[in-house]
Image (tube, rainbow, N blue to C red; front, side):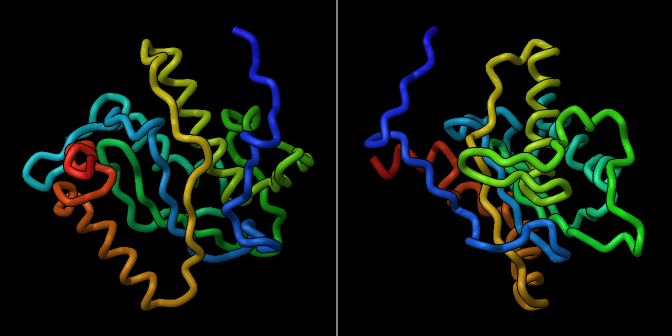
Length: 194
């Protein structure tokens, strides 16, 4: 298969990040990561309870391990849905020490400071963390007979700016499985819109 040729009329990536915002700074971030084409590879929801598939279990396990690899992170509320995950990821201070990766296992994914055509990849930033997370899950899938699994390109984030917003987002995450039947991400609802 030959790579597609770049066509500026078709291939114009625009960043969905806040221009000039430092995503490595302390704060709480609401993250949503979707599977490619919103395929329900992560599990199913039955009676408001999420039942994870094997891929979903691994994705959850790797999510829980993020603070083991990035010592500037803490996890808050999160939920894995059939074709996406929602989570609050906190970037925290680690005192006067320099922030570094504690685990060797993720170093091959965490880049040094590198300029990319479309973005700057900043170590210990939300982008770097999510990139490493997605790559780790994808690598596990390919090594374990799930070559078909892919993440949607990019991810969605929202900078949480106050306690009220944090509370509302936590409630949204907690109630997400109960709302699955109405969720725009639920493939059943795609047919209703057509």
